[in-house]
Each structure stands twice: as C-alpha cells, then as structure tokens.
Length: 223
Image 1 (spheres, helix red, strand yellow):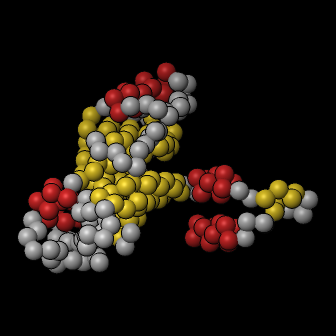
Image 2 (tube, rainbow, N blue to C red):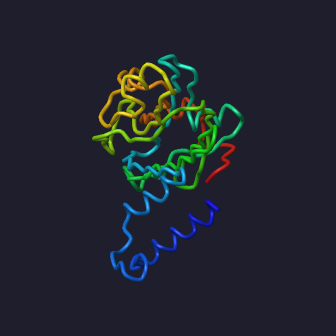
Image 3 (tube, rainbow, N blue to C red):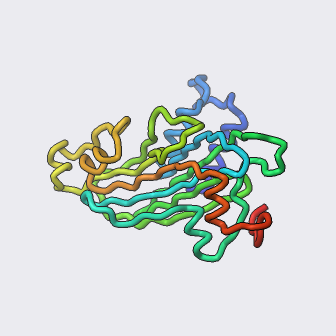
C-alpha cells in the first residue's frame, strides 16, 4: 500500500496540474506532497555540500536514551570496517575541477519499532536500521542555518521523542515542544529519546589515511 502511495505521489509530481476533486481547482504543491509522505512515516531531507578535490562529507550518528549515549557510528566508515571499499571522493580527482557542489539526501522510513535511515550520495546508497522503543510521540526535524561549506562537525537532522508519563511528557502535557533551533545539549535534555545525525568535512589528506591508500583507489566497489 505504501509503495502504491509513493508511486501515486511521483505521478502527481510529474503532472503538477492535477487538482483535488471535481470542484477544487487548487493545484497540488510540494507542501501537500510532504504532508502525504509524513503521514505515511516517510521523511525526506537533502543538503548541499561544496567539496574540494579528494574531500568527502562524513555522516555520523549518536543515539541518546534519557540523556545517556547508547549507540554511535558513521555511515561510510562503518561500512568499510565490514570489508566494503569504495571511492567516496565525490569531488573530481583528475584535477579538472577544484570543487563540486553535491547533494546528500536522506529518506527516513518509520515503522512500528524501527527507523530505516537511507543516505543517498552520487553513485552510492547506504542504509542503517535503528530499533526504537515505544514512544508516546516522536518526529524528525532539521538543523538550521547550515552552510554548504561547513567545516566543523554539525548537527544536520535528528529524530526526537518522549516516553509516556515521563518527566518531559508531564512537563509539556504529552506534547512535543518545538525543537527548531535547539542545540545538542538541549535536545538531549528536553526529549527522552534522540537520534542525532551530524555532517563533518573530511580533508583529502585525512581521507587518504582512513582508506590507507598509496597508489590511487584500490578494491573499489562503487565507481
């Protein structure tokens, strides 16, 4: 059913002149489509990053339960620990381009007791599964004022929720307070369960050390 709904939404995108019903001639717009996706537990985010030759953007995550760090990891680097090798230098490496603007896209699919976190990069897609506890309320939100040239580790997107009858639940009468603009420490304090996703620029020199490369890319799985 969810797959059919997604296909239907794509059809609407390709035919933006579609109207609702026989007597409502207002066109479907991006906000309508976002509402449909969110109602189905599908949350989409995308961020532009400007990279120089040899650099890549590392995406990491931290999971907090009642303020305690329960899990952490990195999308790309953890895959390599498991034996996967690929060229993650998304910017051109032949010297013909000094920098490139690339999009990092995320699709989060929430199910009964888990979140599928899909990351899409040019020529590559990764997935992480997060098992989540039973929460009274939960939602996604994005970081604000994000630069496409960020250099420090930066919070870009996060999931947050509250347990039923918890201190935060009672404090806000069962509602999720607006989290827009909150920093990491406040998110962990205001909500019972939080998954934080960060982006961090990795220099060409550090990338080479991580991959232990000597003479170009070796054992490349993804071109």
